[in-house]
Length: 241
Length: 241
DNA sequence: CCAAAAGTGTTCAATCTACACCCATGC
DNA sequence: GCATGGGTGTAGATTGAACACTTTTGG
Image (tube, rainbow over all chains, first blue to last red; front, top):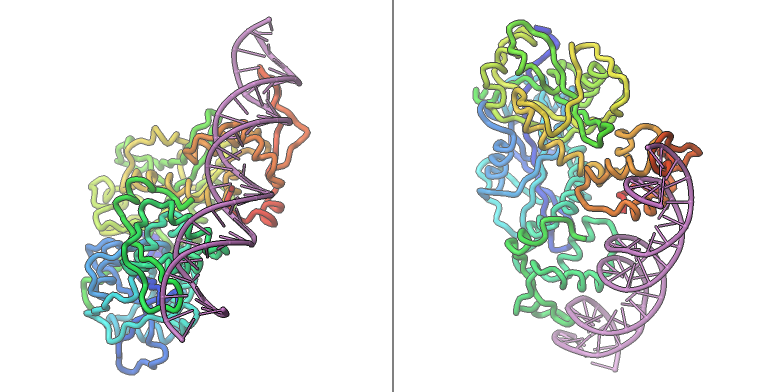
């Protein structure tokens, strides 16, 4: 055997996006109180080593369930990170020793995107704290987690382009066109006129107006809409055009 | 240490596309003559285990260079395959023993797309045969290589949508609009009118007409064009619209 | 009344689509 | 001349962008 071929540990890390009430993208960061770890370095992306008979997709689904308590979450693998030095920081080596009770030399990780309604109750089986963090205020994280987050932003944009329906994973079940607009424009970077956006949405048969309006707003109340996944799948299995 | 956390071998596998003179997509399959291996199972995707201090992108670049003799090839990581049973076929286990001189239990692979002009001389340092194979005639391959190829087709289509310029990696340096048209329509599935395609191409400043025409064709000779990467990068860093 | 946002209508320009028409070449 | 494909022109339809206008609500 060419001894240069090596075995490594393989993990999954999940970037879970949420959209808050101030129209900002957030991600979920976790914390476990491990002895002797400096607190400011203890926030991180949720993740785990994969188990011996586990596919990476299953590992990611497991991590997400342990994270939120939600059984089935939308997820999408987006990149394998395998820089040989990605886990060579001293603190990171220490952390792996604590977390996995083992000296680990190298670890490659497969990164996943996931989406969560920000009002959904988070019911973590595993972490001491699970917090939403706005993407412009993400602290310095261990390993290459900051890089992963940066690249996940590009991926979520691509994802919306190829499957517009996943945007509704981030919105409440009942939403206004303005909410949809603000989410879409924060993800698409294009400058869209909200009035034209209104008209466009009106042409989508899978976005269904409800007989329910906003209340207690100091302007004309907006109508609530809901997303109909069945109609979407039947007719619109392509991009938003 | 939770003994369910395991180390595995990690490999890269590359799906290299080419576009032949009959307007068909082809991929490169390799063969090494190992003792005792049944010949019909010996074709496979080019790939390799990663080395101990090697990133996966570097491993893929190494595999491509060993495969073709070309130093820098365009490549794109597209998916990690980690089904725990993907290498449990008996022949596959035997093959790994021969190839790597070692018993390997589990192996996960990171799949890459690459593109090659089909007329480029293939100068392999490592394989006994390296052959182009049209995508509709790919034989049954070991591991999950058939699945990887099926999914790579979806990926190459997405890739063209997000970066049109990579299409020129598949065409000769001098090409006709018809060649470009046939490649594009074999990848995009849309039914485009070739005459409108002509006009559209004429508006792209990065596709430059040459003073050179086809010869010995039984119809009006078509003009050759070339792709100007610099002009493209400056002006068109987005989709074909 | 005013401010603010909802939601509709109108207009102009850009783009897409279909197809007519002429050109060049080999047989 | 004819078949085949190259390449341009035109007209109508579709779509997109800008923005005016009306509606609703709280203060």
